[in-house]
Image (cartoon, rainbow, N blue to C red):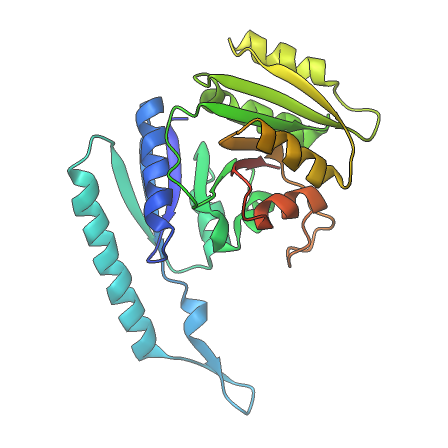
Length: 260
């Protein structure tokens, strides 16, 4: 992964997110792009007659604050060992990241951003969702791949290969639920062609698919779960597939690598 995009803001998880992106860039000898976004639409107000107007003073203050943050990030990153550039945007976060990430290998966001699932469904670029509970360091030691034989799972698996190469343990976890799709042995074979030795764990479903997968991932002490991102419909208003939503909302879930 030579081109990595990360969102930067003033929220508490921003430093963990940035450090994770820097760590991956160092491991892959890659380039880091930092996106600082000031969405103009948040400073639009409606009057009682149905018209709209821009709260110019508030927008100007927000721009100044984000410009200062971008300058501070530039000074900080200039002292490091990773090549970088900083982008500014005034679009909403999801379209801003989707646009900036069109030629990125990976987009890094935080789970508490509440937009990770929507972003994963809005872009073909894989999305690394940093849990925010502890630093994510590279190389990752232990990773699980949630495998259901579908196209999204295969896309996520292919995207994760650069991250998985240096793992001490990689496990393909499948929940006996439906027939069809690529068998898990195909996933193992694909990984082996990339020099990655992976174990297979086939789980009997107990409770929901998400709960069954969560137990297996927890018992493996995985730092990263690779999985396809699914949506129940094309609407983006929180209509994510049950397994995707579960791991985005579960506080104890590990870091995620999602692809759609």
